[in-house]
Length: 381
Image 1 (cartoon, rainbow, N blue to C red):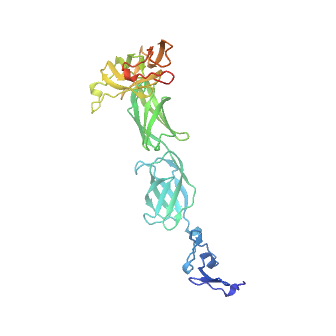
Image 2 (cartoon, one colour):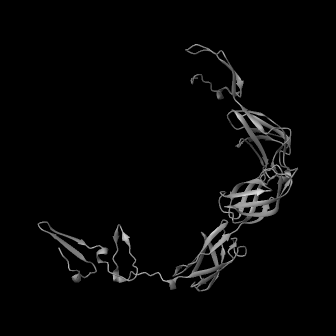
Image 3 (cartoon, helix red, strand yellow):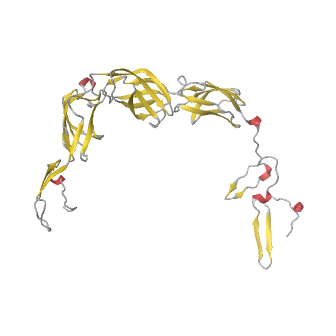
């Protein structure tokens, strides 16, 4: 079949009929691409399930025009901190083709909004919201036009304003809050050192880091916060390590058993003074063995008892922390708790194949509660 294209005209809703000899007829609508016409301008096409749309009224043209494209030529300054107006580093953005109408210019630095404070066709001023330290692209969007061209970047810096408390024990264990800006929202990539000793980061928000100090010599120390790949800020002499406030442990039970024995700790300053206790009456004692809690059962300023957590045989470290006063100092006592559970002897060592032989087992770490001891021989009770 030959079709003369010069005689074909497009209808609003064209149809084609295909006849096959002896089989009757089959009627189908022509899909959009069969009625596509030539255009000098780019066309907008919607495709649904592989079917391209037709264009009603030939109004489907769209053009990318240089004259419609705003342009950012500079930003000043290109480094600073985010925050509310009055605390942030305000940016001045030189712009060609931006809008003089209030609310029609939007600015983002990375994923954070830069809140517009004044705007014209040639200049925008904005206050960047909080964001993690690092260099990020500045993007301006103008209503009715779209993105402005330009490759300007703004570098968020860290601010370290204060540390609370600003002093603590040389033994470490003091939970400190560092106030500032640009920290981020996760502990990943955030580190803190105080006088070259690690302060273990526990929580991070854009404006605060919570960390726990480790041991250090007495005296003033710089607080250094690092975020990401080397972005660091120092608060000179921001923390002071002191002596005298930390509890002192002079003796501690050296052995524990799997069934939960009592650990007795003796020393001085093991409880907060009445003046230093919190409003809920808490004593601030936190004892761990091998990272597990040793639950306090009795306490005085000179003796504390706790129930040892369960562990297999081995050596585990005891840490005694008094909130606000730090980790205890061990004087004449070891911080190692030795867990014991072992068999020393079995008598007799042979018996009847049908059982019934009384066997005596001696060793260490067995429970006084007979039901807590389970004995098997060759996997059988």
